[in-house]
Structures are given as C-alpha cells and as structure tokens.
Image (cartoon, rainbow, N blue to C red):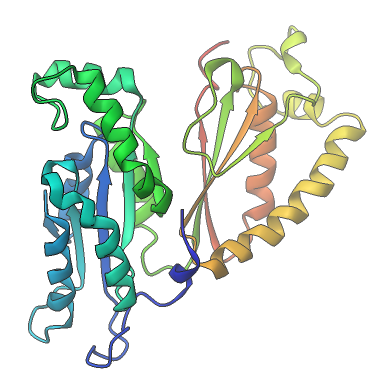
Length: 309
C-alpha cells in the first residue's frame, strides 16, 4: 500500500540533482511464477531501463545513474526476488535508503494462488528457488512468508491467478504506465460474486447483497446490472437511495484524501451473490458519480458477470 512518504515528489530529493527533473523507479517483486518476467517486459517495451534479477544493494546504484548528468536514465524498472538468495533480505532496507535520498521507488508486488503457482511450475518444469531439492508446495509457502513485509509495503499488489499474459500486460499498462505523470488516482471498480470467492487484491470491499435481487425475477435473470430493468429493480425502494446517500459522499471524501496521501492505485470491490446484477449496478453508479472528477481515472472490471446466466 502507498505510505505517507509517497505524497512527496518523486523527483529531486538531493542537492545535486537537476531541478525539476522527474525520475521514476519501479521495483517489481513477488512470488516466483507470478509473472515478474512478463511484467518487466511491459516496462521494457515502454522505454524503461530494465534489469532482471538485480540484487537489492545494486538497486541503489540506479540512484547514481539518475543523478549522473550524462546518463539519460529517467525511468527504470528492476526485478528483485528470492533468486538473489541471502542478498534479498536487504531489499526493505535498500528501499528505505532510496526514499531517504529522495528517489521514492514504486513497488509492484505480483502474487498468485498456491494451486496456480504449482500448475505453472509443473508446466515449466523448473525448480522453485526455495525448494531446489524439496517439495514445491513447501517452497511456495516459505516464499509467501518471506515476502509478507514487502507485500505490506507495496504500492500495488496484483493477483495474477486469473490473468493471462495478455491480461497482465494490459493491467500494468492501464494501472501503472498510463498513470505516471498524470497526478491522478487510478481507481478500479471490480465487481464479483461472493459464491465465486472474494478478490484478494481489493483495498475496499462493498457487500451489496442487502439490495433487491433481480435473480428471482425471471425476465431479469439473464440480464446484467447494466440493463435498465435490472438497475430499476436494484434501486427500487428506500435502501438503495439511503445507501448511495452515504456511500457517494464517503467516496467524494476518500478520493482526494488518497490522492493527497500519495496513493497511486485503489481497487474497490463490489460484491453480490453472483456478481451479475446488484454489484454491477452499484459499480456503474459509482463510475458515473466519479466520472466528472479530474483527479481520478476510473476503470470498471466485471469479474463474474458472464459466469452464470
């Protein structure tokens, strides 16, 4: 998650640095098999100076590159993970040191479910770095525990369990590359069905199962919350009006507060039973309410809307 220090400018924390020069450093870390190689390829394709499997202490050298007049390096992305062995333990300290120097690295943490990671390793037939001779599952669990402090520190946690390579590239492009320099909060409204499990990467979760359920109306069941009839059914009665009357002012308060705190990304998950009717209606209402703001970029993703008709 973003921390208070992120509200400071990314560029120019030292006396010798060029005035007004904006620099960007993205540190990619997370679970082995979660897609870090794919992620850094996205940054490389976008013109970033990229290094894979860089020991944490060498990340500090990038700060010198940024400050060197002739380097020309203004944007860099590096992958640092448990492949670095004992050196990886230094990563949190190195991040602290870089922030103290004014560089403010942005941390992208990639994760995936245990079953997904097992399947991916079986497909590639590679050994897990923490289980070269032992069971794969034990290595995955040990790595999850080791990475917990970095996950808490991350600016963006991205769960790749259900993402294809193309989907991962698209999400990084939308939520990171499209935002740098815009000064806006990248807000994702993610609808889902509780019966399919809640998303792991939500910052805030809204349970809207108290609203009228169109599933029990035959002509509305095959539709989604984007259809007028469903929307009217969900928003009938006093509950929806009172809910919006409390929720929308709260979001009007939270969005500029998050921007001021320096948060770059926010995911609000909206859940109902199946993720097809009520959650979609509410997310669309939030989208329309925030559409006129100039400090937020809103993206809507319907995870389960087409799972069940």
